[in-house]
Amino acid sequence: MSRRVVRQSKFRHVFGQAAKADQAYEDIRVSKVTWDSSFCAVNPKFLAIIVEAGGGGAFIVLPLAKTGRVDKNYPLVTGHTAPVLDIDWCPHNDNVIASASDDTTIMVWQIPDYTPMRNITEPIITLEGHSKRVGILSWHPTARNVLLSAGGDNMIIIWNVGTGEVLLSLEDMHPDIIHSVCWNSNGSLLATTCKDKTLRIIDPRKGQVVAERFAAHEGMRPMRAVFTRQGHIFTTGFTRMSQRELGLWDPNNFEEPVALQEMDTSNGVLLPFYDPDSSIIYLCGKGDSSIRYFEITDEPPFVHYLNTFSSKEPQRGMGFMPKRGLDVSKCEIARFYKLHERKCEPIIMTVPRKSDLFQDDLYPDTPGPEPALEADEWLAGQDAEPVLISLRDGYVPPKHRELRVTKRNILDARPPTGPRRSQSASDAPLSQHTLETLLEEIKALREQVQAQEQRITALENMLCELVDGTD
Image (cartoon, rainbow, N blue to C red; front, side):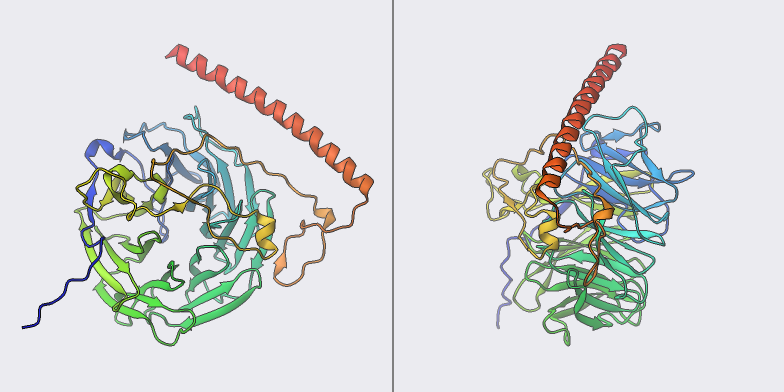
């Protein structure tokens, strides 16, 4: 008799565990809006959740340590005039978050390290360019202040948040509603899925679809796609018989899938969360009460089922912690923030190890908070892989960093070429005298701003002292 050989993998025994009750966040009125986004975004400092709000859209931002019952008067981030549909933390600044709304705008917010006294109502900048609801946001993985948005007008816009300008506008590529958009690891390509059942690979700076596959999944329900570290595309969708299905594709040969597996019959769209360090993909279905996870390798069948974390309550949404926010001393390789109807519950995925030493095979160097490129460098055609950091000594988030928005002079515009570019990317020839004058003016303004910021900080400190005194 031939013995069945068990596949060797250090992730075969990954197991999930819900955090204890006192580690959950209670009494949060999670949004009931019908939209297939995750409703939750998390980073090493903060947890953000889209919530129910009368007369507009809002989300709540909690410091990670603020577990337990949340006061019903806890300040919200409000400013949108219609429901918030998606939120995303900036990967290069843990105090900056973007929100997209049914009101057609995107707002970028600076979240203070201290708990604000009242609602945050003033964004750093409001980005207006879509004509219909904006349902998808995604920050560029390596370039500073570059944000992508996709709207119900079937457009993708790439913004420079630092100046408020449109860098690129991709207009005529999707004939119907865009269901998902994902950057590759260095931000040179996009993978998109659309209601027309087509999976597209797009070079945004050339404004070209470089590869596409019609009916990667044959069902009509929404499809999702993410890039893997090998450059493949992992997709979730539905068969013609409405069974949920996952697929792995090679963009250089879209004719045949690398792998295609049927899963189960359920209506919930599967949200894929991919960890490139371990090459594990976690699938969380909206309305499901489980998280299934698979390892993607170079050996057939390429997508290997690992295990399922099951619970009793269905999930309304899910947040996924970046690797630098995990506890390496407990061999934690992923942490989810599961949204219930009125609470958020952390779920911790660990690899059991006997040793207390740092497990370098579980924690290769991972993307850190420093960008590799400036927005202008990326737009000019440069690419760079993420700047990596070691987690050997754990990760300490940097102190509060201000995002400064400098609006450029739209009058200095050059005519756009290729994909529609922003009006304010100025190349107008300037005399030496004009340059020196501008530099002096900028320097004087910076000094004024610095003085104002110091004054604001002093006033905030006084306010905190007063509040502490009254307590």
